[in-house]
Length: 81
Image 1 (cartoon, one colour):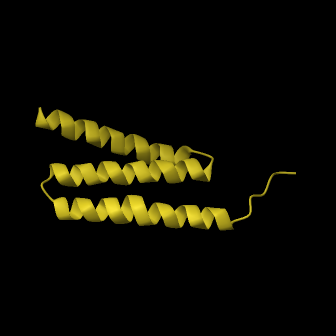
Image 2 (cartoon, helix red, strand yellow):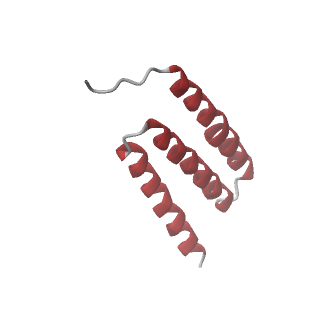
């Protein structure tokens, strides 16, 4: 059963990675990358590395997502004319 959880987490990671690259809207990609980091934190917990999991959740899903969104707010959106 533990292998099923590992395979399910791996599947979610692959789907999130593909979605982050394929999405056209940058905000959607940022949200998917935050989900990717949270799933990666679960993978670290599954591998009995809670310290790495806390770091991944705090930095990967927290700080990085905040910085991406702050950068996105400061950029100018151009429409095709």
